[in-house]
Each structure stands twice: as structure tokens, then as C-alpha cells.
Amino acid sequence: MSDKDFPYSGFSSLAIHAGHQQDPNYAHLTPIYATSTFVYDDAEQGMRRFSGKEQGYIYTRWGNPTFHEAEEKIAAMESFGVTDEHGDPLILKAYLQASGMAAISTLMMSTLKAGDKILSHYSLYGGTQEQMNTLLPAFGVDAVIADLRDLTIAEDMLKKHPAIKMIYIETPANPTIQCVDIEALTLLGKQYGKVIACDNTFATPYLQQPFKYGVDFVIHSTTKFLNGHGTAIGGVFMSRDVSFMKGKAYKVYKALGGSSSPFDAFLLVNGMKTLEVRMERHCSNAEKVAALLNTHSAVASVNYNGLTSHPDHAVAKKQMRHPGAMMSFELKGGLQSGISFMNKLQLCTRTVSLGTCDTLLSHPASMTHYSVPKEQRERYGITDGLIRMSVGMENIEDILSDLEQALK
Ligand SMILES: *Cc1c(COP(=O)(O)O)cnc(C)c1O
Image (cartoon, rainbow, N blue to C red; front, side):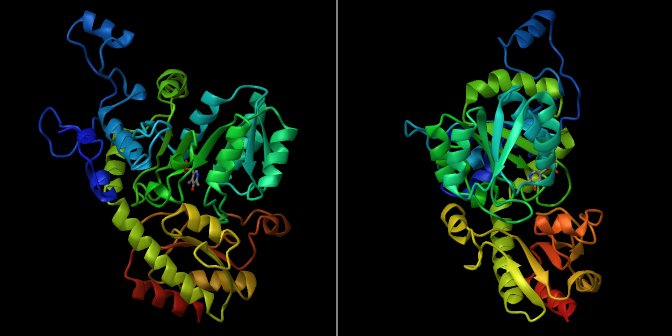
């Protein structure tokens, strides 16, 4: 049975089954196609494959059956219940990539050229920021960075910089958990004829579907919640413009060479099947953790978009099913209390990254931002006592007691 024929009523049914094709040897799971190349019966078949007259795999950098299942599954999740401008089910085309950054590179190189500009929000994943600030300018593409939570500012920038080709958003953003209004920005961007791209890594398609609002491109770092177990780096680049994806974007995808590996794709496929149950648990745990921290005497403030005190609470509520599993909080007592809190953790894991089964905590001032001068990091909101947390799926009582004993 082809998954396209079955009218899935629930997200998990789709996440488990969509994208799967019967294996020629009847393996239950799509095998890891660990092969660099694919063979032809005769020279004529090779000709038909290369000319595109016959469907089939050629070389793994160009596509692979294990990638294909992951690509189709993510596309099915991002388009679940979403319709196109004619009211028909939305069709997406996705390419699996070696990392989230590779997906962003393919997006930028296939949509922009020298002289174009990107409009983006000031809070973005560090690697994306670096790509916009240092790599792209060398190719003649500059970024206009503004507070895109303010639509008046966004419109002023569009008027002031007619060379803006793309609006690039990330919501919730890493690491501030700030949210921008996808629907309002897409409406505005479309009035000015711009392309809209959204990094949906923090939310996942279970919590938020940017294509519902008319966004053109969605990218993910699948390394995080989509894989869900911290077993592989990966990314995906996808669009509603299927002919662009099969044409220009496919050429760039092949020539940049950032395709995934069949092993990583296999791990991703299996991780994604449980996305709904994992996100439900991550999110319900996060709400309870936020409630504890919010009233704790050792905590100065909690930054979590599920709290009504968060400046983007209303926007998050409008476009996300649940507030997500990421938060940060500020300890009273600065650097020393941050270090001592981190050292006392027994159950939770001290590390960067996010989206795995276990609860992950990092202390940017002593870890990721240790070498950044205090004055500079404080401008980005990275204060001495700031702790970032990816709430995991352990039993909530255990997470809460570990935090309570470490906060003592
Ligand atoms: C991690 C991350 C990326 C980069 O992904 P990699 O898989 O590490 O290359 C991009 N965007 C966001 C929001 C991320 O959290």
C-alpha cells in the first residue's frame, strides 16, 4: 500500500507509516543502503537514468533509498492537514542533508545571488548568524538584521532595502526562545514579493507547521528533536515549490555535496516515528519544570514561552500546539552559583545541544561563551547566572528532585 492513499487521521500514524516503501526483499524496515553508487542492466539503462527518462538512483550524493524515506516522512509531517492555494493537499519536496547548516547553505546558495539581501531577526542559531555575517557577504549577499517581532520595523526595512530577496526566520529562536509571528511576517513579505524561509528546529512539525501560513521554505536541524536520541547530525531543506526543488535546488544540492549518510538517515527515520509521543512528554515535563523554577527562591527569572510573563507568549500560543521543551533561567548569585548548580546535577546531563531523551543543561558563561568577553555576551542576554535547559523525557518527579537538590 502506498502511504499517499491512506487518509491518516492522526499525526503518529502518519509519522510511523508515511514515506515507507516496500523493500524489494521484504525487509520490515527500509535497510541502510550503504552504497556509494547504483548499477545499470545495460548501457541503455544508464543513458535513461542520466537523462531522467527513467526513475532510479545513480550516486548517493544525488539521492539514496534510505534518504528518500526520511525525506518523504518529514515532508508528510510538515504538510499534514495543510492545503495549497487551491484547497488541495499541499505537496512538498525535501532533500536530506548532512547537517542543519548544510540545509541552510543549500537554501541560501539556491535562492540568492550577489546583490541580494536577507532580512532576519537578531536572535538566531549561532552558526546561522555566522553564515549571514561572515560567509555570505563574501559572495555579495548581505543581511539586514532587525527586531522582526515588530512588524512596523520589518516593513520599514523592506521599504528601505529593495534588494531584500528573502525573509529568514527562526521561531522559537536559539538560544533566547524568542518567537516571531510567522503568519503576519509571511503576509507582509508576500505583499512585497519576498521569499520566506523558516527554521522550524525548536518546534518540530508536531508543534508548528510554517507551511500553513504560506511560507516558501522550511529547514530543520534534524540533529535535535526529529532524531530525538542524539545519535546523528542531520538537516533537511524543503519547499512547496516542487519544480524549483527538482530543478535549480537539486543542481545546487548535488554540487554543494552536503548530502546525508545512509546510516544517519536510518537513525533519523526510526527516531521520527515517535515524534508525537516524545514531544507530548517533553512539553508536559517542561511546563512542570517551568512552574517549579518560576517560584523557586534561588531563581531570579525564567525564560519560557509557556509562561504568560514571556514577551512572546501570545505569538507562541497562536502558532504552536504546546510551548516547547526549551527554556533558560537566571540563577541569583551569578557565575559561582551557575558553576555550583551545574556541578551538583546528578540525573540531568551537562552538555550543549538539545532535543534528546535526557534532560540537558548548559551554563553558557562557563561553557559555550566562556571565551566571549562578559560585556559582549551580556549584550546577547548571556548573563553569568544563565542556565539553558532542554527538558527531557525522564519521569518528572526525578527531574524536579534533581533540580531541587542542585538549587539548594
Ligand atoms: C542546531 C541548530 C542548527 C544547526 O544544525 P546542525 O545540525 O548542528 O548543523 C540550526 N538551527 C537551529 C535552530 C539549531 O538549533
